[in-house]
Length: 342
Image 1 (cartoon, helix red, strand yellow):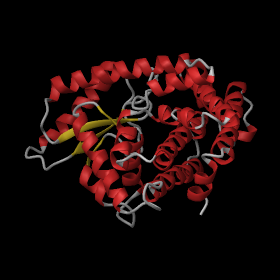
Image 2 (cartoon, helix red, strand yellow):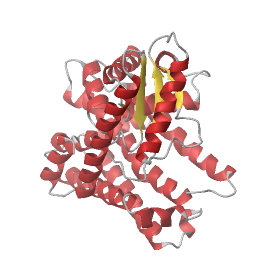
Image 3 (cartoon, helix red, strand yellow):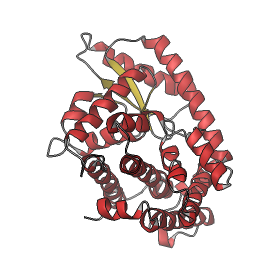
Image 4 (cartoon, one colour):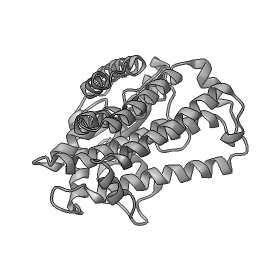
């Protein structure tokens, strides 16, 4: 488990065994994936394989998907390499009994890093490109050539910072706005998918993931952006690159335990947030509870399944704790009101 999470759990007096186990499992899978792809594909092809999702967030379970993108960083002379990279990813899924990317078309594709960085906003920035760019920043992990992924993060963050900050050393508003845009987009798209589907498969589990896992990733990113203003690093760009490349999402949120050290109520809210994250990690690792949640149909308020209802109640309590943490804290409250309201 990342040292920031370990440090926070010690400071807050909580144990996180499920998150620790998921982190160890994820780290092992990432290391073995790197060995597999390096042996299978070699390096210096101008292509990288970036994984998102629970594996990248170090929250993986045996039921997790392998959500990958083949990312082009330069023009590849042999176009058949695109197919060989995708085939290697499919073989990895078969070998490890991992679920391949879902049917949405976001993952399992070849994408150009330059387009993701250059086309921010306006009509050319589709839902797909927005999703890929933000997820690659928020939780992406390279399983082939990590230096290329770090280069992507450096260039992407530089592009956002070029748009300006509110003030020297302030929170990067351009990047923050795009992160908020992505969060609002997936929330709206989720409702659209429920509306369009006459038989919403796995609805209950997707509902809980949106309200817990995805929400935690969003607020973890807000924490990193606010830390630019709170800690005033000498080099904001390098600080953010390190945050996104080196620190998993939940660990970025856990870092706040140091910045809120004198705020007992804020630390209590942070403690509750991490406890819910721990409980949901344990929930996701339990096949019976996952299956029960998948079988629940909308709307949530009419669900009768006790397993689903209990976790939904915890998601409500998570929301309340996050509201307290970000809006009642003397440290975070002014930033939240300034950057998240108007």
